[in-house]
Amino acid sequence: MKTRTILLMLLALTFTSTALLAQRDKRESKGLKKEIKKKAVKEARKEAKKFKKDGYAVAPGALPMEKQIETAWMRQYEVDEDGYPLYIVASGNSVANTTAAAKLQATELAKLELAGSISTQVAALIETNIANQQLNSEEAASVTKTVAAAKNIIAQDLGRTLPLFEIYRTLKNKNVEVNVRIAYNSKKAQEIARQAIKKKLEEETDIAQDKLEKLMKWDN
Image 1 (cartoon, rainbow, N blue to C red):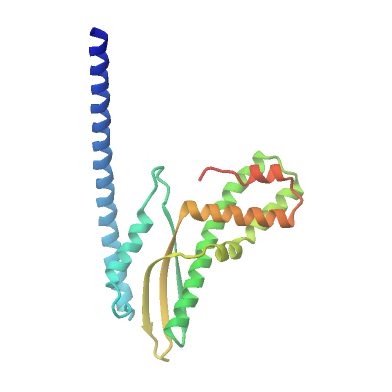
Image 2: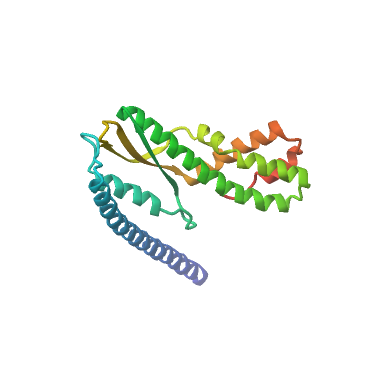
């Protein structure tokens, strides 16, 4: 009977500790979100003021510029459970004789910038693995060359990106300039890059499959 009472007390203490930890984590999460929101609002106001001064506006019916830019900054500040950026963010700017054409070109440029950031991150991870897997100099050179040329492949494989904001202005020659900002989930981006580069290495090198598997393995 005494043992049972002690067990029940320990169980009660465990539940209480778990509940207190959950409450603490919730408070910390709310505090972090509040801080991110505060920073995002500050940056958005400053950036929107500059864009408006330069003659930019948003499309009719779209969210106000400050709100769109605030959302963009929120995404840039967000981190995952390990403290790493949750999203990769990129911008694109283009001028064309129609809004649609300028927007398309600006978005493609942003995707290329996004792909460039992803390939740079992945290159650093692969560089570490090259040393660990003891590739010979020829294999290492092939990997480095493939990774360096992977930006366009990654951009093609990204698919839909998350639009953060779109702003427009009409120039004196009546052409339209469009400025966009987009985002992509960091972990998903790394996985896409991993698969794209692995496929390219399989097609263009003679590196053994087991070496390739280890080379393209990392925690993301």
